[in-house]
Amino acid sequence: MQPLKRILLIGIITFFALLSASCNGGSYGIVQPNPEDLCKCLPVEPYILDFRHIAKHVPIPAIAAQEIGVDTILSWTQDAFVAPDAPRTGRELQVFHVATAFLQEASVNSADCDVHFEISMTADKNAPRVIVETIVDSEFCSARQAAQSQLKKHGFTLDSSHGGELPQALPIAVLGMAFEDFDHSRGSVDVATNWELHPAIVTIP
Image (cartoon, rainbow, N blue to C red; front, top):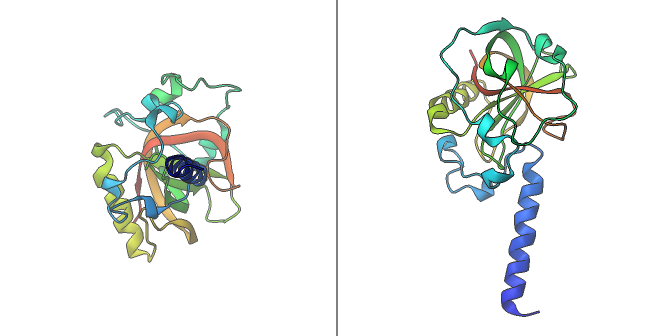
C-alpha cells in the first residue's frame, strides 16, 4: 500500500473509531487540546450529522417556566418518527423547571461537546432516567462551568477527560426546554424516554 493511502486509511479508521465511541455519551479527552476547559471543547462530529442540530442549539427563552417532575417527562408520549431537521413545535417551545431530581451520570459528549446529564425521580440507581443537556454554545459557558465547579465540591471531576456514573446520586434542580430525540443509544440502559430537557441548566447545591 502506498504511504499516502496508508495515512488516509489510518485517518479514516481513527475518525470512525472516535465517532463510534462518542455515540455512547462518554468523554474522550485525548481529542481535546484543553480538556479541563468545558468552554473550549471542540466537537468531533460535524454539526451537519447532528440530529435536529438547529432545533437543539437555541437559547432558553425568558418566559415563565412550568413546574414539573421527572415523572412528568417520563409520561410524555413519544412520536413514532421525528424528522432529522424538524423544527421545534408544541411542547418543545415551552420552558420547564424540575425543582427536585437526582443526578445519576454526568459526562461530556465528544460528538457535539454538549454536557450530558442523566436524572431520575429518586436516588435509586435503577430508577428510570431522563437526559438533560447543557449545550456547547457560548451563552451556556457559565452554566457548564458552574456545574463542573459544583460537582467538584462533591468530589466528582467533570471535564472532557473525566465523567460518567456518580457513585451516589446527587439532588439537583433543572431549568430547560423540552426536546424530543430519536430512539438510539444515548446513555445508560436506564434512560427510559426519548424526551429530554435540551438545552438545560443544571443547578447542584
